[in-house]
Length: 365
Image 1 (cartoon, helix red, strand yellow):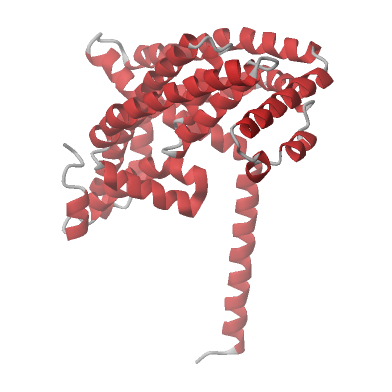
Image 2: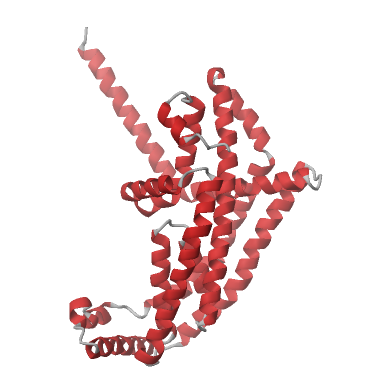
């Protein structure tokens, strides 16, 4: 029999649950930077696990020494990138800070006017495509020096985050067996084997995925760099790196990278003739980038998706598309790792399900 006391207790429990959930979400929001450090450390751990195993099995290093060597490789790579980037960014920031903002605006407006004249000379009404005058009036050109200066201050505060990530990653690599032993005590005995098997397979597949992803980004970066150097684009290294990083976003990233490369190419030729200098250079860079994407889409990506996580390219495409519609760009980035985790869990806990059998038939091959 339902009584007023029972209803009141139910309402009270619901209120307490909502309150605790709100406090928990607020706490997670406040420590979001720590969660980001942990997420980055987990990814580095997945990448580092095969390296640690290589040092232990091939070179007969102790586990601690193998971990230290792996962390040293990560640190060397990060500092190598910083050594290459900081002087370039610092120099560019100093140059733009010394420039008169009105001069930047003047050159950019001149570029827009040249585009306008070029389109009209080919009997194209630019007002039907872009409202150039409104575009020029709404652009705050002073943001360029300010942005680069703020970027330098961000790099200077990067040290704390880097130290935190390295510290967390070291113990994730060093004490992974200890963490597993601790997890065993929390896992119900009835599902211990399935959960531990899932963890092992997820670790193996995601390690292969992230290593393959790094290899893909490196290949794309080299190809982008070659294209930019061939056409003499200033700051080719930075542009190639930024465009390669955008490839982390499946399908949409390469499109954004092409647009970014076109814009930076046009900016680098400010003050030159649009028809004879700017337009040919921009078109050449775009064609070069599209050739790179053709190579990447037909070689690099199929190897990563098909080999590293044992999923068909069409299957991956549909998952990324669905994740993009549901969760935006972030969903597209995490779609493949998350889908791989779900496949492993499904194979371990529901091996008799016909659909799961079909999706996971080559998962551990």
